[in-house]
Length: 150
Image (cartoon, rainbow, N blue to C red; front, side):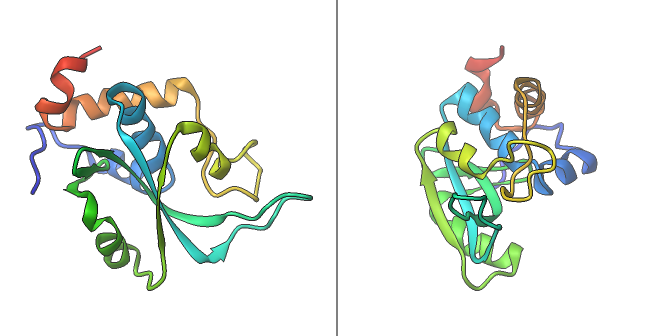
């Protein structure tokens, strides 16, 4: 199922984009390739609600989806298998898989400040997205990135 380039992600890159920055990698593919965003959440573990706001579920992972395939820093899987793979990897019995229409929808899960305990995903910058895109161009199948080299 894997069709990654000959220069795979390093252990440090895999750790970064599977332990707190998966959304940044997915957003790089979203911005540069038009990939869809799929978020996997744990509805049994919600973040504390902000004053006057709505609580959000804990995020387990964010995937980029292109066609029938889903991508993250370490894998290419069938999009229809996201729930099953996530249950195995995250050891979660109950999870929700939601397709997001835009980066704006994802921002509901992103911290507004580095000390924001009410949102599960860390803040990011355009430079973070471009850094992830540099890695993505190196490791993703060339059929995806060849026409979008810049």
